Image (cartoon, rainbow, N blue to C red):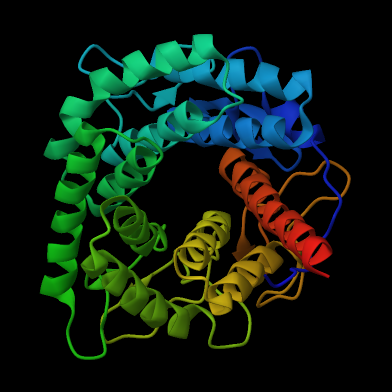
Length: 353
C-alpha cells in the first residue's frame, strides 16, 4: 500500500463554535457563526458522520457528545412520512415540512454509516434503526440522481436482503441514465456536470461491492476516467466551477470551486481504490485532499490554522472568507479518511518490512 503525505495537525475549535445545543449552524460570517441562517439537516447529517469518525479515531467524550447532538437533530428532522425537513430557523422552527431529495439521501448516508459503526451507542442505533424503517418506503420513489446515489451509499453499509434489493434496483436506474446520456467521448450520467459529481460513480462502486454486478464497476471506471480528465488536467484537482458548471460540448466554468467537491472526490477515489487495489485512485484521493491544503488553482490553503475551520471555496479573486458548516464538515471528513488510510499504509509497511 502506498503511503500518503498529509498535514498531521487537527484543530476542532471551529467545530465547537459552530455547534450549539441544537446542532451545527449552517453559515458563518468569516469565523463568526451566523444565527441568521439557522440550521440544515443536510449539514447535521454529514456532521453526524464527521463526529463518529472523530470518536472512532480519538475516543474522546466530547466527540461522542457531538454524535448525540447531531443524531438528535436528525430524529427531530424526520416527518411522519419518513422523509426529512431540511431548513430550520434559529428559533428551532422548521421552515418547510419536507426537504429536498438530496437531503433525504444524505440522511440515509448518515444513518447507514452510524448503524454500521461499532462506536455508535446502542441507544442511538435503536433510534436510527426505527428511523431507517420509516424512511425506506420512500427510496423507490426518488427521482433525482444524487438522492439515489447517497441512498445507495447509506444502504451499502448495511447487510440485509431488503437493502441489497433496493441497492440493485436504484443502481440500475442510475445506470440506465448513464447509458442514455453516454455519447462518444461524453461518458457521464447527465448532459451537464454540476455539483457533487463524484457521488454518482461512488454509488456505482458501492453497488458493485454489495451486489457483485460488474456492470456497475464498469460504469464507475468509465465515468471516473472521464471526470478525471476534466478535473485533474492541470496536475492538481480543480472541480468544475459552480457559476456555470459544464454543459456538454462547452468549456467548464472555472469558479467558484466548492469545498464539498474535494471531500467527495476523496471518498470516491478511496472507495475505488478499496474496490480495485489500483494505486492511481489512491493518489487521486490524495490530490483531492491536497486541494484544501493549497495544491489548487490559486495556490492557497483553505484551512484557517487558528480555528481549524475551512474557507467556503475558491473564487476568481481568491478565498471565500466565510467558513460554513458544509466546508468545515467536508474538510474534516476528508482529513480523517486520508489520515486513516495513511495509518493503515504505515501499519502494513511496518509489518512487512
